[in-house]
Length: 68
Image 1 (cartoon, helix red, strand yellow):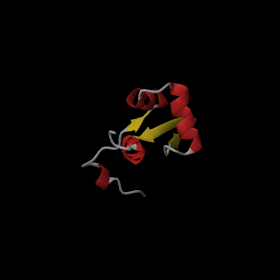
Image 2 (cartoon, one colour):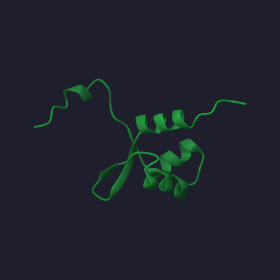
Image 3 (spheres, rainbow, N blue to C red):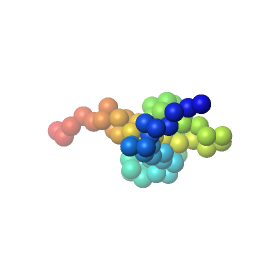
Image 4 (cartoon, rainbow, N blue to C red):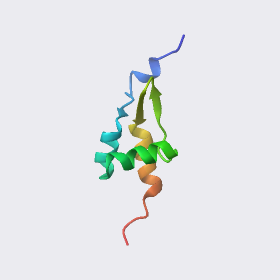
């Protein structure tokens, strides 16, 4: 049996492709492309595909080049 006690303090937030698109200010199809290519890690729940909010934040940090 899995131990879920570590998740009580910090809740895992899962985002839909539309949420990812909104946060990145891109189209939903572009979000799906990033997810399908593996650029943004995904979680599959049956036929649904979700992105952990922490993985999206990490993706953004990796893409950040700073202001010129």
